[in-house]
Length: 195
Image (cartoon, rainbow, N blue to C red; front, side, top):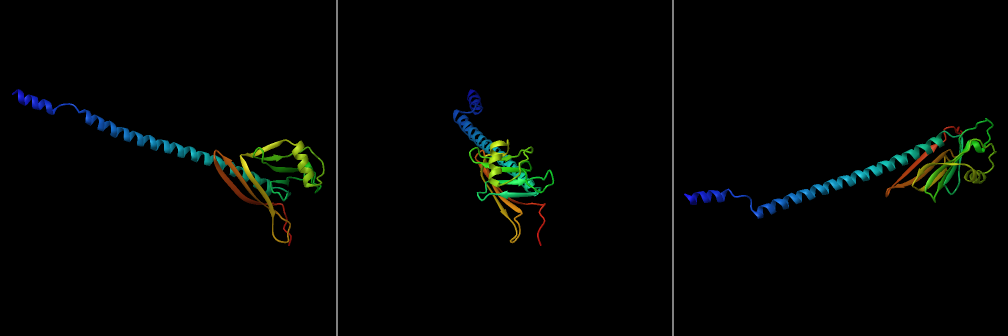
């Protein structure tokens, strides 16, 4: 009788050390796989967030430039292409450019910013592009339209034989190790086409 009781008792014994180690190994592998998946998902979310922020900045700059050009009376672009002047309005209806009616878009490569300069109180008559630009850079306060800008290029174009009334532009912005380039063109809507 005691032999049968001992055999039954041996069959009911707890798990062995080998079984415990196998169970711990399997649990560890499952845990490591889960942590790896969560880390990859978190990295992907952060990267996507950075790209979304960058896209918002580039689209905002594009809309600002498009609006400034499409609603202006006239514009000028230097051959270097990293700045442009825009005749925003003719406040006194004299068909003469005055400094207070013009804004300057300027790429500051040192601080990597696209800046807008304008002083509506300046009534000096416009003489040359270079004179206005120097005056604006020296005397006007700037408004930053975008930071993290690594390249800007403005170019005038239009139909052959007509006054250039289109500005094409390329603006590259970098944020958090990501880069996006917006390429666009805007037409001056106030321009009357010549037949």
